Image 1: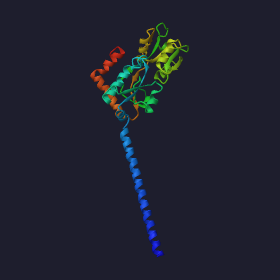
Image 2 (image 1 turned 180 degrees about the vertical axis):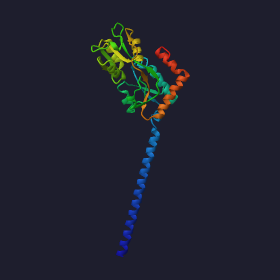
Image 3 (image 1 turned 90 degrees about the vertical axis):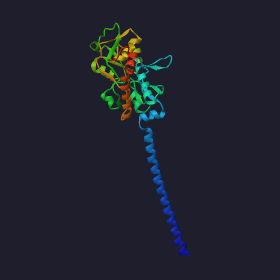
Length: 283
């Protein structure tokens, strides 16, 4: 009796052990399968920036709030208006069928790339010059605006161009801009003072904190419109092609943006917006 019981007990333990092993194996397979499935769903749901825009039903564009003609906030209404803003609205309409499905977030020359890389914005449309250095950090659309760096001074200033800048000259620029780098190369003797944004720099110029302000001519023209006591001098001394910036590797999104630019130029919409904001037709 004892031997029979022992034998039965051992068989039962073996059977339970086998069942336990099979259950563990099944759980392991289900867990692995579940993770793979979730990973695939996440990838499909994510699908890059373009898919995220469609899923949230809203485009988040990083734009300037301080740059007349391109992106300037009206302090009375809070609305942001300009050439870049209208391009952003056109992009929202192309992707989502409605130009109002857009959120505009303020960026500066210093903050725009970090905000894009952190995913807080989908695209930068903010007077951003295409450079080889920046191409290491972001992907660019085709050129959507051709600008050139120049100087803004008081109408009675003795400064007539780069050749007038010397060790006693204070030139104002914006942090993180190509203009600040260029002016140091083109006028190495000049003192360069950098500000957070264009309005701060222009306010400083008008307050007598500097002798000249340098950035792209199109931006300076907006300042000249604000205060006719200032004007551009010396012509352009660089080429500044603007592009819209997108996270690296987002080829599908870049293609959509380039399609938009082609469509706008073919339809005449680009020329209309350019003339509306710049006062002249594009060359």
